[in-house]
Amino acid sequence: MKTIKFYTLGCKVNQYETQVIREQFLKVGFKEINNKERADIYVINTCTVTESADAKSRRYIHMAYKENPKARIVVCGCYTELDSQVIKRIKGVTHIVKNKDKYRIPQLLNVLKLKKDTQEEFNNPGISDFSGHTRAFLKIQDGCNNFCSFCKVPLVRGRSRSKPLEGIVKEARQLARKGYKEIVLCGICLGDYGKDLNPPRNLVEVIEELEKIDQLLRIRLSSIEAKDITDELINKFAECKKLCPHLHIPFQSGDDEVLKFMHRRYSFLDYLSLIQKIKMGIPEVSITTDIMVGFPGETEERFQNTLDLIKRTLPLKVHIFPYSRRQGTVANNLKSQVPIPVIKERVLRLKKIAEECRKIYIAKFLKKEMEVLFEDQKEGFWEGFTKNYIKVKLNSKANLRNKLIKVVLKKINPEAVLAINNGTLTVGLPN
Image 1: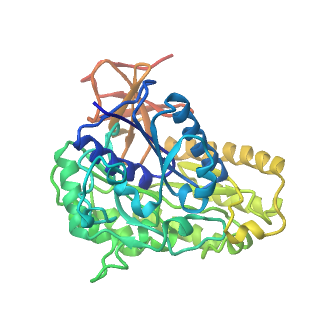
Image 2: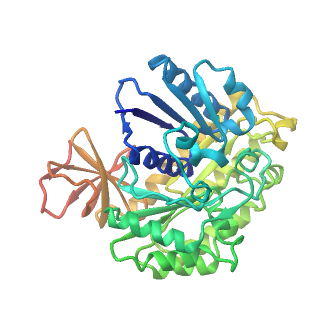
């Protein structure tokens, strides 16, 4: 039996796309392996959002070649779009596949014949499973029209485009029948969903269709830009019991001048007023965000404005990205680059404040009963998430995988909140 390994870097969209490719290979008899055994084929689905992602993509290629020099090594994804010449020079690479041809990999390797119309981005059968996960990601949109000055994504993903609504519903039903209780709607610019369709659609329409699926108990949104959070969407959060009260809104910075340099169409006050409106409409909502540290021109005063925004919005989690120069972007040519030691020091300060904000947000829910969808067991503790994305650990001997359990949040730890349940399971808290 032929064997295959997958390595996926980057965003939820990439993970979804790997699953599409995975299912194609499994249907023709390939066996996926995840151990140290040699595989016949390696598929490395790359990311290029930062220089670190580029380097990690190269490391996976080297690792695959070292493991089996005779294997076919397929490199696909965003790193291939602008850096294929770099990839060609890496020993062992047999195929470089651009994003538009990702779903044709089995055909390119002569292991599967596909009709042309099933190879297109949104005309494929989608996915019926999501390997290794209890929450399934469902890609409904690709591409980006925003062209932030630091970002290569529009260069490697193209313009915004959307999956037809009927295809989304069909795929969601497949996943729900498979036993997935939570689906995460994802896209490169999720809030742009439907603007290119005829007739135009929007995210609220997708939610309204998915909430009709009986077996589907949770609908979660991945990252969404501030400009796409409409009153209609906030009202939908307030009325829909299946929609998880969690919004990931990339701020990137809290300083108006830096935001201008970034080509972000928001200001400090825009973010602040939006978060206040969201919290008024969705009382239990959690906010998570992305912050870029060390963008060219970020002075100490401007960085302090970012810290102030974080303190005033109290996000549950802050994903921190040190600025990384990206060839082909406007920001790559900006002067006033921030020294790396300064960036590292600011990252540490932001981490400290982000952790304080996390504790303040979670504290409101301590001693309260909340429902958790458990995913994996690590060192005797089951880990999962509440609807508002608080990570929870529960000590139990029972098999809780993919189960919704009501627990009481007891103690804030650095990685998760320790919990006890209502007494129906054997549980305990460490000292």
